[in-house]
Image (tube, rainbow, N blue to C red; front, side, top):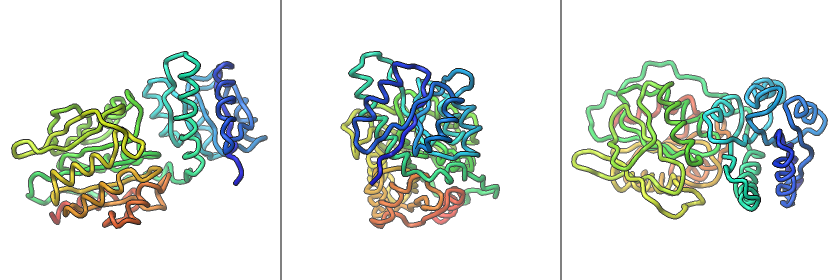
Length: 342
């Protein structure tokens, strides 16, 4: 198998060299070139034809986001953004980047090398498998959907990873304020989940926030698990639900984990839940979705034709966890359809 050809774009000479040195240690990676700005990067892309590009957002002569907007329509390719803690990363994802990593604030060389080996390398390998043509296929479903069921204590649980920020937005923006309470795990570094929640809150009809222990699950409200070292669990309180955010070991390599959330929903809400698994690498969420289905919940998986990475939904489908497999643009419609039969 040929190595993944990588182009490194960063304005810092020191950081570029550090990236090249550490990425090159992996035999499955070949760093074919570097660039300090988008103009050098454009020439390198035409000459070297890399499989994946790493891209800093803050660059001289042209921002990384503007470069993405100009690049992707002409030369679509997997891009992993390296970003400091900023909501600009979501503009980059909206502009066609596959994924991002949070640049460590520390200048300790060993910490930077650990970041490259354990985070960036993984993202590059995942990005090399991504279907770039599916990144922008988030067509709005303009049908006026409404909830007609009188059933109370319904809940919707969503899990996603690579490609999930845009996929979740595509689904959630089609929900009205009548939708039952929604709980979400999207694999994301600490700090970014709060900015992501605020972004969705500004652009969707439902209210979205980063979850805290004790937050009630209410109709028209979305709770997103905070990135970091804690899992989100659903618990029953009185005649409703709330979430608990508590520390725990990584599950399937992730914290928060979709499986942890889905399994708590299966135990707590049973047949009163809808589980949705979206684009992402690996199998996190598949077993939890199966537990939900066995408990009587309705389950929906994103189909291969619209996934950026058909990993998590495929594993879930293969083990029988997915009841309905839908294109991304049809998931909100299917959600209302199954809720109205509950």
